[in-house]
Amino acid sequence: MKQTIPTYDLNGISHHKFHVKRMDERTQDAEDILLDKGIHRDSHYIFTCMESGHVKMMVDFKMIESKDSGIFCVLPGQVHQGLLMKDVCGWFVAVKAELVPDTVRSFFDESLSEIQPLSIDKNLIKEINTTAGMLHASYTDEMLSSKEGFLVVQSLLNAFLGMFALIYSRNNQSPASSENRTLQLSRIFRSLVRKDFKTSKSPSEYAEILNITRGYLTEAVREATGKPAQHWIHQEILIEAKRLLVFTSLSVKEIAYELGYSDHTYFSRLFSKLEDQSPSEFRNLHHNKH
Image (cartoon, rainbow, N blue to C red; front, side, top):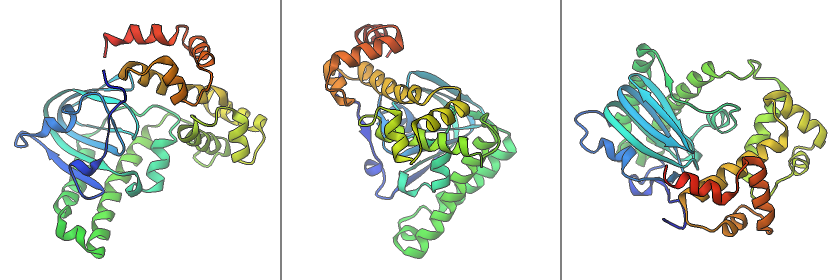
């Protein structure tokens, strides 16, 4: 087993900041897109639109499956592995974070619900495919080499990504009022936690960053999510700990230090309390599965 979980960027497949590819029966290397890397992370976003076919992936210990017409995405940092790709027709778009519009990043990165594959109407698939086809036709060195050409391509990319965010937002089960202060605060808090959980582990630290009291933060997060602020900090720590336990050979002590704990026994006690099993027990239980 490897000491670290491999993280891939787009440099190996494109010298641009995004990559767009058509997947169909004529694309002989289509399966390489999802199946050739094994267990890994990507530093970029992956957006996939399927007209038909069958895909299975493992994303952070959970099996996701998409059949026929649908869309799904994988966020930067998520540990995933392609398991099945059969008769797939559609589009694959990988995008570095800096090219993803802030509104799209905010929706996916700060979502209060899990991002799952969505089955959508074939007419909507056609609209996405039209945009993807235009994007693919413009994805040339000639277009991307000039400032004007790049702006045209970027506008098409923004349209494609915006459609994804719009479709997911329509299916989002979180409270409908997007202007609700409590919901906004919860999203911002969770975004900060994803970024800083290794160094900041107390709600008080995030409350200070947000210029609010710990009590107000805890109340707002609990109202929006049903869970206190500390729960979400622990969840980020847990998911990263689980990734390292299952997908690397780092010792529990090394994992504790990687997660920002100088006292590895405290980390082990916390993990055991939250998971009802020790880190070693969790590792042993899941080794055979992955």
